[in-house]
Image (cartoon, rainbow, N blue to C red; front, side):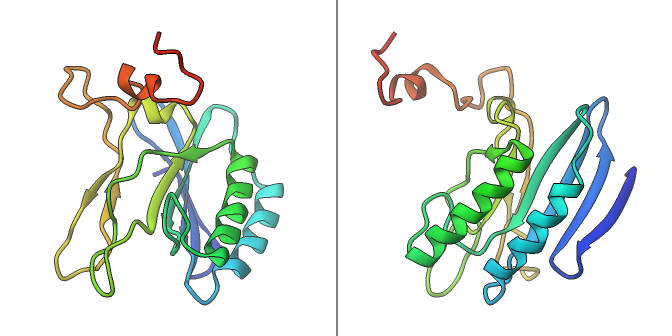
Length: 169
């Protein structure tokens, strides 16, 4: 851990850490259901004045409280557009999501996620860990994709061939 700070008390903190060689600038965000939209405005404002150095890997992680990756309501669609503004500022994209990150009534859903530089989707895959009794949400980790083939990377040939406009080559 190199440093940590509070960006929005109770809702967003910043951790600057080093794991082996790379340094990471991790924003951990909780978008409370009743405050989802109102929390994004001060966070975007803060980001206009605080950017990670070029040699540091930015990551945005947290409980976004809307259905990822496909919003289900117009309000969720608007929230997804505002979260995309965060991605634009930090040059991020969603990393591949697990099937669901929240269990319970009325249904399971993917409400939690991690976004990183687009190249991370090739080298890492989100992995949920369920901690019974602690939360109805999974803890997400970001282990590297194994080179021995035991984990199919997101850019496997079948995935590339399924892209719109792909001619199968």
